Length: 106
Image 1 (cartoon, rainbow, N blue to C red):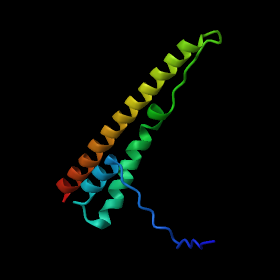
Image 2 (cartoon, rainbow, N blue to C red; image 1 turned 120 degrees about the horizontal axis):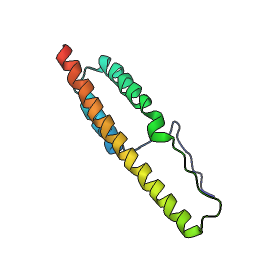
Image 3 (tube, rainbow, N blue to C red; image 1 turned 90 degrees about the vertical axis):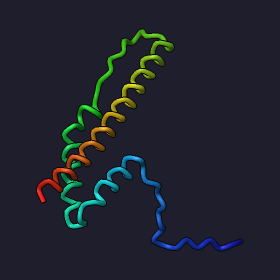
Image 4 (cartoon, rainbow, N blue to C red; image 1 turned 90 degrees about the horizontal axis):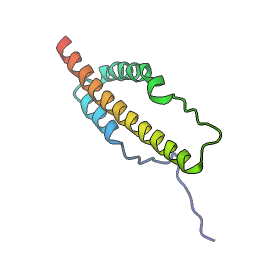
């Protein structure tokens, strides 16, 4: 029976999403001491959109057939994906705007 020893802490090698890479690239221009302030401003912006992008209701009649129900859910999923892409675009533009404004103030 082989011994499998796992070293701790486990190094997590997570690949960054395209969005995270854009944020990191934009912030790399900013001195380290000021990056957290800009990240906080970005988070405030994202939070202000929270309900629009994460909450919505869907009323479905009880007597709807299975095929129509699947179509409704497919449309809802497509709408959710569209909203997530919009939010991603907003975040990309906002971080670049925050960085640009940071350098204008300096």
